[in-house]
Length: 415
Image (tube, rainbow, N blue to C red; front, side, top):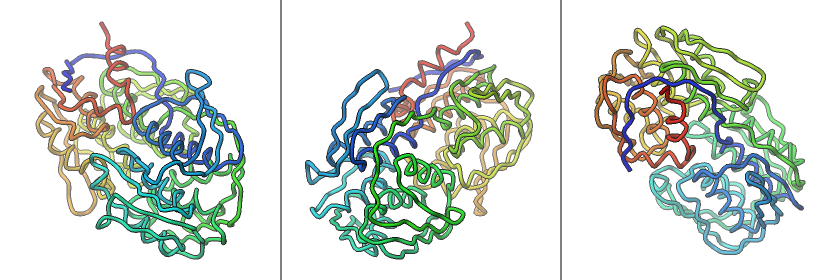
């Protein structure tokens, strides 16, 4: 589906969708809990639907008891020997070790760009922890069979924190205690989210600076009532829109959240954007913007929003952490360079893990989403200050994380 975004200004308030990172973790914990958990503020983007499908396949009973409320009776009792994770990288890395808790073989399958993303750190870790694991030359499909025993393991965390998150949620149910040493840990805020979510369900995970974890085996997840907070990844994009094309107030979010993408506030301040940080809302307003420096190593999902901000700033902005972008829905750094280039914005990527974005005028044109939800949103946001309409090919991919993005963008437009 192609969508054309005309230039224009925005003003208004919105509520972002729920954090799919928290939602998927809470769904997994609810599956593992003995009893009935209640999750509030659940919204159904593609990735959350994939996680829901996974927990049902693995034995959970799920009832929707309100517009955004789910009642989940846990219990790991697989109903099939195939687990379809869709195109969700987190679901693949989250439910593979959970599936390895059982004694029956389980084949984990995915779709689309996920089939190109690496799984070998997970399969290697599961083998060392006593389970059977076989992958397809390091990628999906993956077959696993338990039991997951536990033990001591060193894992490379440089590719993604998702591999560690999956192990952290599964290993409390292993037979033995586990000590997990994570080399080159990235996206530490996401690991903190995992530890805090497990704690909400009565499971303790001890750690040393989120690089060394001690997980006692034989624990039990307890049912919980959990309200999923608003998504800072979506909020970051909307705040970038406010900072470059008018004024946007994002409600039901807090800068005290553990979500990694709260770091966008630092970039907004450094760029000179107008910013109001309230208890449960943040407003960004357009001001003359200046180039800024930012390290996105631990929050790589911010790159597309930062590109919106930097393209509107005077000078050359420097963003570190481009190596984190290779194994996303596309090679996100190259996609940003190529598509912003079509709109007249120069982006350089060097071998030192750095992206340099030259701020300037944007031109109208035709661009591709590369099938990546965050690239599509970034290009739509930037298009608001172009000198003509921008047509985005494959814009429907926003359903992966923010199905109502284009509707919200249209509603914010100043008539």
